[in-house]
Amino acid sequence: MASSTNSCNIIFHVLLLIQLCSSRAIYEKSKNNHMEENHIEIFGKKEHGDLDPALNVFFHVNDLYLGKKMSIYFAVSDPSTTPRLLAREQVDLIPFSSSKLPYLLDFISLAEGSPQAIAMEQTLKQCELEPVPGEIRFCASSLESMLDSTRRILGTDKLKTLTTQIHNLTSPSFTLLQGYTFLKEPLEIHVPDMVACHTMAYPYTVYYCHGQKGHNRVFQIPLGGENGNRVDSIAVCHMDTSMWDHDHVAFRVLGGHPGSSPVCHFLPADNIVWIPSP
Image (cartoon, rainbow, N blue to C red; front, side):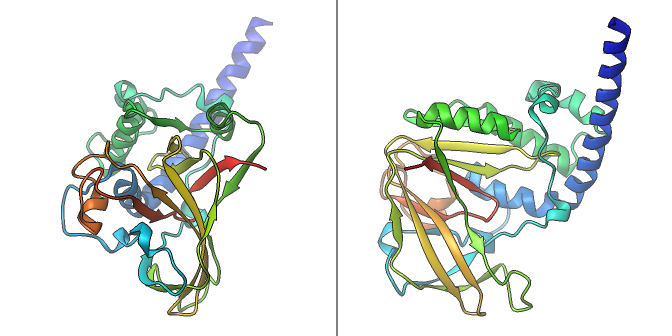
């Protein structure tokens, strides 16, 4: 019986290694854009260069009105280059710690110091940061773990997801950055709490999820693009920024400083906002 169990474990690990190697190939193709988008949104600052067009996601809370015009960058993920979402029983067998990074890099044959390895290290360190007072945060590498943590935080098993929907995506006129007009008055989704989950740069799918109890507002905003595209967007306004880093990129884009004013931003299509379901 023990021999049979060991054989099953060996086969499982071999299959997992094959899956991770496949994810690694996908990861190498997608890491450049994916790393940059998440570096802007999650890490809060860029270490080099001038402001990037992808920073056109931030806006002020007083911009929320019918007819507002602004340039917005909507990142788009190619399903063929998107890292896979593994099952809980698989990710539970893989160390997820910056202290284990050398082992992980060796396991999937990535060179230390490579762009992919640097992105992995940034993701692991971000997931290991202690939350600021009043904030909740966690990283989830499986749907099951994301659901468990979100249910615990929101205090309910009845959840609803909100995501940005980009229409006419295959249209030749679609560009990541273009001018948009608010087609309707932004609709606020009144909820006591929410959890926003952002995809991170990693060989398999990892979500960084966070929220601040009672200090966020969620909006649905239909947008019309100057190139004829339509986006049903989700935007989040962080009403209390007093504990944010002074170097947060939002202050470079919008001006101000921690605690000076709310910061709002649009969510990419592969991000998720969890709210209690009525």
